[in-house]
Image (cartoon, rainbow, N blue to C red; front, top):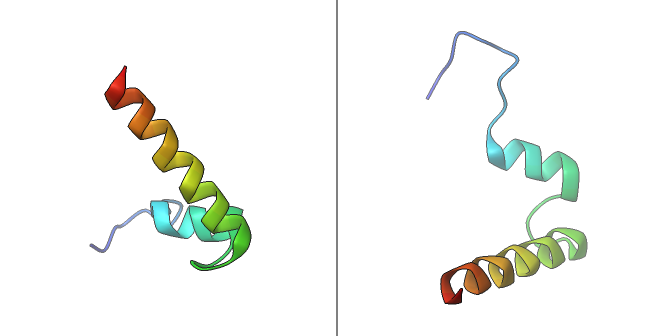
Length: 44
């Protein structure tokens, strides 16, 4: 979805800059922790 504001980034772009591309060890570790947190929140 194109935007007029060029300062807005997508979540995927942010995650790529912060943790690297999908499949990179740092990104995989982050995604595992996020999933574990979400499962814990559902159980709670």
